[in-house]
Every structure is written in structure tokens, then in C-alpha cells.
Length: 258
Image (cartoon, rainbow, N blue to C red; front, side):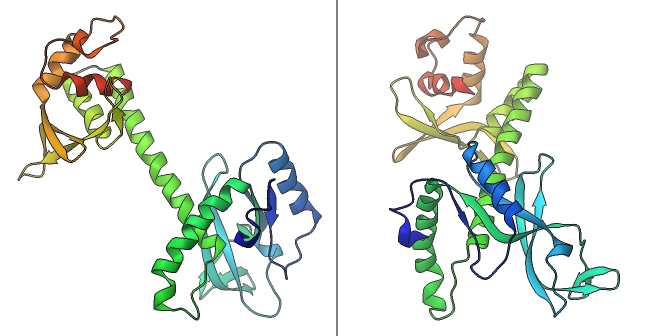
């Protein structure tokens, strides 16, 4: 794919050259892509992909409640049995959806693939230069895990914010501040920063925020944050000084997008 990266300008389908997929899969992926879909995988029912001549390797799909693909579990030596199928003695659901390496992708994916290929050459190839393989299913699986991780963090922040809005106590506000640690913000003048919260010897967070900007870190007392919060009376806060003459107000104002 990377060899034709500069030629591909439209969404495309990737398949194994030696597999027969049937027109239904091509039609489904095509319709998804031409209607604005960014990426997809055609799922096939496992029992329809098994062989009478021995074990096969299939990527068993896991999905969320909205049928979004969350993981592809590469499973080797799946064989037919009298009751269905098994892999190394473990029963496998024959009605599971599996990947047969039919992927619907867009040109944007090739940029991500190329970045991953460079990392592959740096980390994987030196240890096994003759047999190291850059497998698309494994690469996409890693992307899915990263996406899930980011999604989980967003959900954690959303839940913390929801609790605080429903019950605006100091404890719940602290939960929001903890959830947003490490998130990138900008000061009123546009300078990027984030903050961290250190833990004490007892393993609990200290109520002190450490602002990480450029090479230096500055501390911000929790009391200052609470003072600024108390100065918000419902009106629009359009500049740092509107929060009061408070040490570190520039950074407190920068987090107003929480």
C-alpha cells in the first residue's frame, strides 16, 4: 500500500490476493465508504469460513454496543468439531464475526500506516530482519486499543464533570480537577500548558497543582483555585483578572474550558 501512497486519492478496499470474498462484502464496504465512512472492516460469520481440510487462522472480532469494532483477536488453528469449532481445545462460537482481511480505508490512513512502518523498522526489524512482518490487522488492532484508551479517558472526565454539575461540592470539583490532569490548555495569551498532581507518601493526591510550561514547573495552591471558583458569579469571564487578584490566575483562567 505504501508503494502507491502518492497515487491513491480516494477511499479503497484492501483484500488478501488468495481469498474469495463474494460480492456482498465488496458491496457493503463500498456503500459504507461512498456514504462518508472513514474506515471499516467486512465481518464474516466464522462457520462460513472454516475449512474441511484442517485448521485456519482467523481474526475474531469484538465490538461495542453500537457494533463498532474494538478488537480483532488473531486466533490460530480453528478447526471444525461435531459441536461447532475449537482452537487448541477451546470452544469457539461459530457465529462469531471474523476478519478475512477485507478493509475499507481512506487515503488519510496511509499517513498513519507510514508512521507505523517507520517505527516497525526501528523496533522490530533489527531483532528479526528475515521474518519480521508488518501485518495490517495487528497494526489496526493497536490503533483500536489507542482509540479505546483515549475514549475511556474522555468518559472518565465526562463522568467527573457530570457528578460536579449535579452536586457542586468541593469534593466533586476536586474529582474534575484530577480527571483533567495532563490535558493541554492555553493561557489567555495563547501559551500552552498542562498541570500535574503529585501524590504524597500515603499514596493520595496532594492538593497542589504543578503547572508544566516550557522547562519550568510552577505550583498552584488548591486554595487559589477555590478562591477563583468562588468569584464566578454566573457572568461570562472574559479575562484572567475577572477572577480576582489571585496567584496563578493566568493558569486558572486557562482551564475555564473544562
